Length: 261
Image (spheres, rainbow, N blue to C red):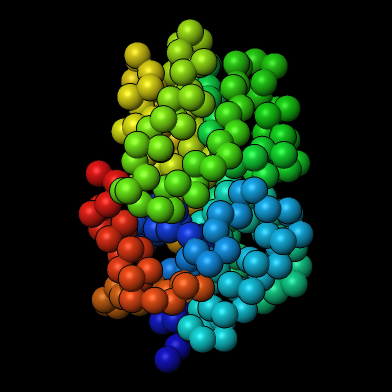
């Protein structure tokens, strides 16, 4: 197999990254993907930075060893903020991409009163705080750390009552600020987009950053001669640190929109 025919590895701390995978697969229709969810160790957002670097590197090594990936996409805001720069230094010969809270996109599209939802670890790290420092003097930006939310989403539909209660508790204090934009800074959160939107009287614009990431991955693959042939039929595989049939089915069902409707 030629290098450009090999798959792109996509990882997350759990099921959330399948939301990113949807956009990648749609915008890069000839590329093959292997999605790895580290559900055994989910969620990452309340671990230490050092632990997240270690776990992310373990996933990278598994995907390169067993699936011969040509590129690695960190579809986890927490892992991108914690581990991407270190992984790039450790593995300079393979393209590594990451997702981060799409605050710039919200600002560029005219947002003035912007809520950013993310894990506590993402919001504590310099990557997010550099964005915050850049824009908060000219925009009202409300940082909303969401402890426990990714873990509840990881549990699927049975947790919907708890998810709705927690989202209400987190967002109800913001209603008086006329929020016009919401940045979903965790890849689990797009699966509850409608629950989040329901908390606001005016329907805010929702930003994930996925389209920009997919465009950048496609551009870089083409520039490096790694873009898949135009006649390659897309194959998507799912794997997990909890590599059970039930876990793989859960990923597939989430990806295909069968859960958390």
